[in-house]
Image (cartoon, rainbow, N blue to C red; front, side, top):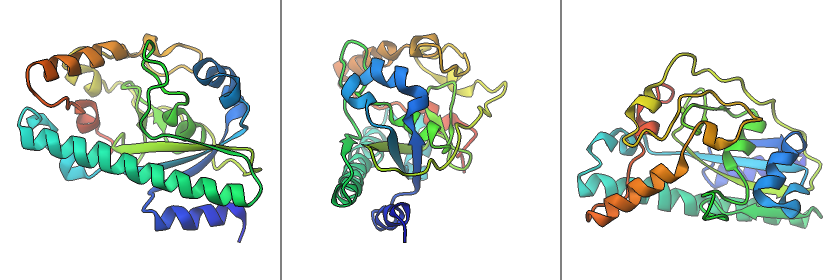
Length: 234
């Protein structure tokens, strides 16, 4: 069994639904701008994803109800993020035991509070690994499960073969995620690698919306762009 096969075994035992390897060199400038030289130095990214519980996502139109919001935040964020972090830790340990330098990226982490971004884009790693495309919601959209997947990443020097090429967008004329957003955070522009995120998405509008919900005594749950995407709906 090769190294990737060993990673597959660990991922399967951890309940990981998606596993891929990306060559990060093709996005080195974007990686460096977001996370700095240390992050950009790693030539490979191991991308993993866990599918969200569909029944939990399907209740999001009723997210104003405390039980619905709490269930979503717990099972679609807290629990799955912990599972992702455990999986990346174990994958990292294997790679390190095999003599390869690794940098596991937390599933949930804001590295830059001004730009509201992490040190590394999990969605970009999954996209480069051929697991999906970046939709108009700025989420990674998979053909089978749509954006209903949470992602994490292990950066490494291990000489793993990339598992695919970046997938072309399949959103077409669809703009359901744009239309349903309660704060109009999406512009409706399709993903273009050379454009900044702001061309497609105003992250601060979402942050302010969550702050307003908390100020009104409600749980900060939304996720309507996950819910409405035709890809992944059951």
